[in-house]
Image (cartoon, rainbow, N blue to C red):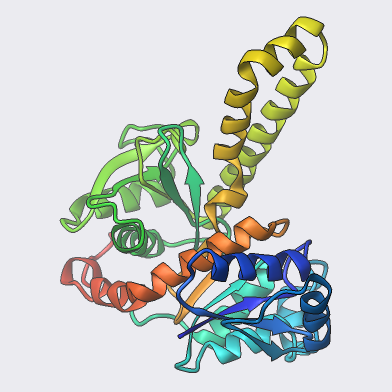
Amino acid sequence: MKILLDAFGGDNSPSEVIKGAIDYINEGGKLEVCLVGMEDEINKVFEENKYSKKNISILNATEVITCEESPTEAFRKKPNSSICVGLNALKEEEYGAFVSAGSTGALLTAAVFKSGRIKGVSRPALATLLPNVKGGKTMFLDCGANADCKPQNLLHFAVMADVYMKNVLKIENPRIGLLSNGTEDQKGNELIHAVNPALKSLTSINFIGNVEGRDIISGDYDIVVADGFSGNVALKSLEGAIASLLTILKGNIKKSLSAIIGYKLFMGKAFKNTKKVLDYNSQGGAVFLGVNGVVIKAHGSSKAVSFKNSLFQAEEAIKTDINAQIAERLQDSEVKDYKFE
């Protein structure tokens, strides 16, 4: 089994992508990595850095989809792009996953059209793993694949995330929250009012109620479910708040000699550890739950460590046969036959 890796996705391609693949192999990755992209340029990086090609192969793709292009148009006009070539190959039995830091819109569009949905999935969802304040990870979905959602979509999001967290992250009974403007059952819009009782009715999941945006990474939830519009806004707000806080702290430290001395002598390690915990590069990528084959979206500005971790993430998803388990759970009568009013 091989993992396909888009060598020309993201801001730091292809050098950081290739280094991530090399680190994955050197640090015990058990699957072969197939780099997708312009073969000559990939080989040039290997030659310049004297990298070994042990357990690494190349699948040539002559085009690249940029983030400035319309996802739908690029998908149609660039069939030989690394994203399209990679997702076409994902249909073959020898490939189990595709990892890319390229255009999110193009990746999701191509994944749906080329790979198709798992049987029973109303809509796939983009799910990211966030570091939480208790040192664990919280899965947050949908992060932007579906701006407009129906109640059934969020029901499926919760079930798919539950399967993933149980099998890939080995969390026995994931605590699930539904993003709302208050924790009380009567809070929220029409969508939340329809989804809350539906999630409560499922005996196969551990739904603990509505969650406010401020508690997404509190560590009190293992999964937080949202529609793609609210989820994307919340995620970007969270990323911006964390980046701003670190910038403010850094600026304040530089304002006084005593603060600089205190940082260097006493608090430097604590600040560095905090920054490391909050670094998205350490979390791997966002998994596109609900499509055939494992598709993982790495952050656009990912460095080698993020690509390495995304490859380990893909390996674990392949090993646990996550898609087959999602399909099975969605056929459960309490999920399949639930009727929304």
